[in-house]
Length: 478
Image (cartoon, rainbow, N blue to C red; front, top):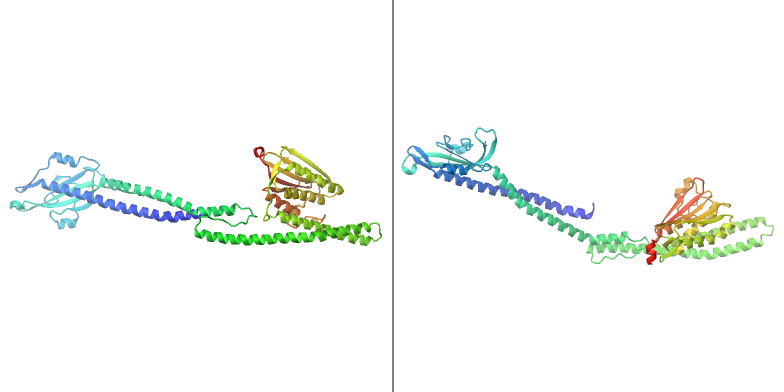
């Protein structure tokens, strides 16, 4: 999981837990306040109803106009039910379906002190639909102030809990809506804060990902936190060590190849002179041995040249300035340079071009010439006398394809996967050292291209180089 998502998750989880806990606490608080308000209303209604009761002899005078009754029962969604009984339990007035007080209250009634409880009662008389109600029970002693015996009266007022639930839900929504909005805004602020805080890490990643393999310059992190500066310093130390190691390796290869080139060239020249002097002599064994020495010297000189080319084509080696190259003219020049060697090897070297007449590419001319020359040299060495080699260019506005085709023996199927390995030779013929295709691949990849091998059904080998062409609009503005 990405670091930004982990941070966001760890920051949002406590907010969600707190939001849920706050919602539960808000629900309990709202229900408590609503219950208190409803209980106060029920108590006031019961006392108001009690004031309408007056003792009359041994009976009761109930001054309760029908208009007042209509007001209590006007709202079908929030109906109030009432009942008056004396002695408690003997119905006098109201709705006789109200639930009775709990037994402990009936056993020990406390006059003029309301008692609240919940119960169930039919929504309408003779109805099977039951509703939850909140009930207040108020016991009153009437007649004591007139010198008569006190008469105990039970006054009950009930109210449906539907309105209570709706009111609690409205209060809860009104409380949670701004709280949820605030949580969303805080989450957005946290998200943008995380993105801003991780921006230096993204810049560090871009600097590392976007680098070429040969670019080992120190990483710069201006304005980054101290923790990232420590990481950047560690990376810079590693890059400096790698750069020093690669430079030492490059210097060693270059120095060794230069030191070997001169004596090998001298040895090759001396053996050529010695062979010319012994050409007319009768010392056949000596000529044979000297020819072997000359062949070894030629192979050593070729190996040194290839090592120098390999050192220049390494990804870690500095790439010279890219230039706009006419690939068509470069190929024609390189093919013309190799024609004399092909003729001496009794090989037909030809040239083909198809597609767009424009074939411009961004490249370093020396390295690109080296890659093409290696392909032609390999074909001449391994195709064999009497073979045909064709250098072809297929060009369009987007890509350029260079093909070097021959009708020689090619590469055995079991060895084709290792063709680009360094110092691997698919055959013992010729004076190759197994570096040609590896050098070609390194050079082409440094130019952003690819190398491809094909093996036609009729035999032979085709080696292709794919490069990106410079678009015509860029050529016109350059």
